[in-house]
Amino acid sequence: MQNTLHSYYKVFKPYGVVSQFTTNDRHAKNKTFLGSLADFPQGTMAIGRLDEPSEGLLLLTTNGAYSYHVNNSGVEKEYYAQVDGIIHTSEILKLQEGVHITVDDKPYLTRPCKVKLLTSTPTLPKRAKKIRDDRHGPTSWISITITQGKFRQVRKMTSAVGFPTLRLVRVRIGKYTIDAMEPAEVAQIKVEF
Picture 1 (cartoon, helix red, strand yellow):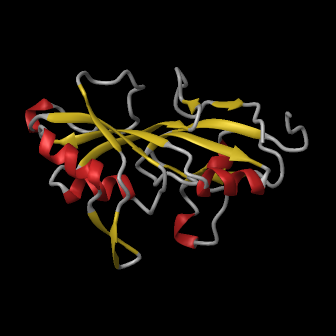
Picture 2 (cartoon, helix red, strand yellow):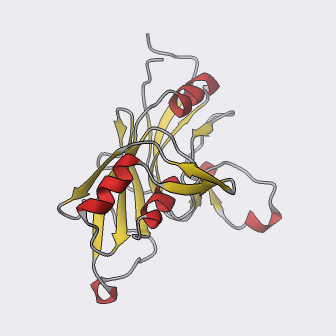
């Protein structure tokens, strides 16, 4: 049954945009927030977050129950990560099995997840801020699919195996993808919940 009482959106969050609508932090007043991307209805919230330098798919809704469902029911979130260096099978296996990172200043072992090497550079829009070029050394692209999302988790995971993330793009949440969306694009979606 289609839920008509609430609004649902998918957004391609651009690099440098903060994944919230407002802040009380006086130092963050010059930052760009989600509310600048469209005229969202009152009560719209981001379902999860992407850190400021990360890009890609965010789901937004006015339905708190749906937000809780996506964040707490094992819904898959897939990321494309460009990492510094040529990553090997041994590191991909470590990522798949779980690695030790720090969350809230405490040790945390990530859950087993899906990780694969992307054999070609994914087709993504250019990032607003240039990363670097091949003169600074080779890079690899991997796909990481997780079902939980701790603060900066994917970045911490790739660093834990010696391959810092240079660019991070979330491409999928459950059945929703960024498809051919452009940065800052907003699309209303239908959700059955």
